[in-house]
Image 1 (cartoon, rainbow, N blue to C red):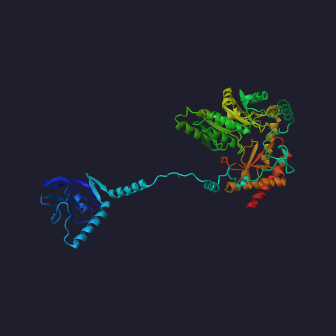
Image 2: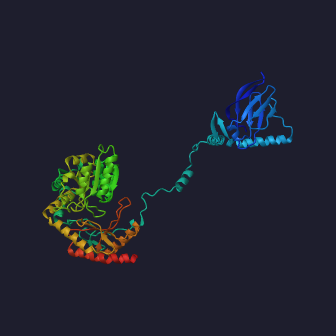
Image 3: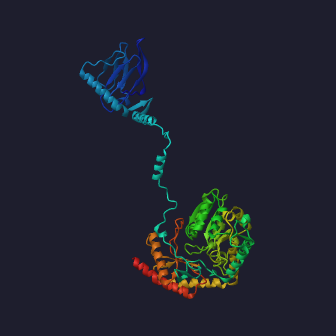
Length: 579
């Protein structure tokens, strides 16, 4: 094994024809040993000198003085710092003749030492220090050779036989079509055997119903039933087509105009399903690249609309205006194109997951300061808040023109179905062309539009319904204020009284099971029907779970007193048994 490093120090090339030395380069190999030895090999073409082993300091300090090659093939070496001079005589084309077995063994040892030390030696290549490069080069060579020697993958030349195909099919296990439901989601909810009014029938027993958002108690109202009956006789059950394809009926236009008149907006648009309102309205206005700042406590319908919009979503802490302001400030400062893209704030007037009321007056100030648009869902505030039931804007005394887009479901206060969006004429006209739920879904059944119109008429004719609802909420608050183990976290004016555990178990699954046990015992032993805020696997709301009580104007004082007594009896019992 021979390793050569060309340096800038001259030796001489030996030309056999002219027998005269000519300049060439000297190759040096270094070793940390202190002994210094020169071995000479002459060939017909060139002379190679190996200093093996050589002390590093000798070369670095330029301790050699001269190397002379004579025409009689005698090499004379003078080395500064050494006591002796070496004189070697060799025949061209041959290695030095060993005169004894000892010389042969010594030469073999020297060659083995050289082969072992060469990869780890230091060398000068045109004055540049290089260390250990032979080892690296050798390793790379082995890797390259290995990679080149590998055969590339080739598909089998023959097709699989029927037997092999059958065997592969038998071994294949497909993924489940739907994810496996967690244990807490596998229980069957109670089945109602009558209308979901203030009282309903479950398993043959009449119970007090606080699980339905029938805020004004209009479910089963005679005027609504008469309106639906006449509408069914005139229009039939369904519309059999989207609004833009012969699915628009005059009662749809009447309902849109009635809602707009009641809220004081230029125009409104109807949707055939409550959740599809947010599914469609949000993606119709906000696209990829736009920014939506949204409260972390919004319900799943809004969450899905945000997902479908493909916009950049930024959540602020639930009902925390300081958090909202920090995010708006950050977006405005960091986004260089902030003024060129659409920016929205999305909130609920009354949050379904907490019963809290959004501070609309403060949000309007931040909206105008940072130039954001505001979308507000009034599903749980329409017909409830304000002295006439016109929602959160009336509750705070804010002009509705300050809200860019207002949405609501009609399945709560109006005791119908479907949803609506209201606002300026431009906002509504844009949805008629761009909102998927409006363009592609069959329009709202005519009898439900008639029922919504009648419900608004009843609300305007009977403002005492709102007063009665507020009294019932206050009565429930008074009866549950000292409840052991649970506390009320909702707003005192909210129609949703939300109870959560004072001391969480630390596990969502355990908290849900504890609340489910309370609800089951209330229904089984006290005939009180309440619902736990159980969320689907798709719902990403981070707020704590709890028991949600939907208060209705149709509940009597006796109903609410029974609910309070039952909760004060059951909750401590269940919590103590768990401990």
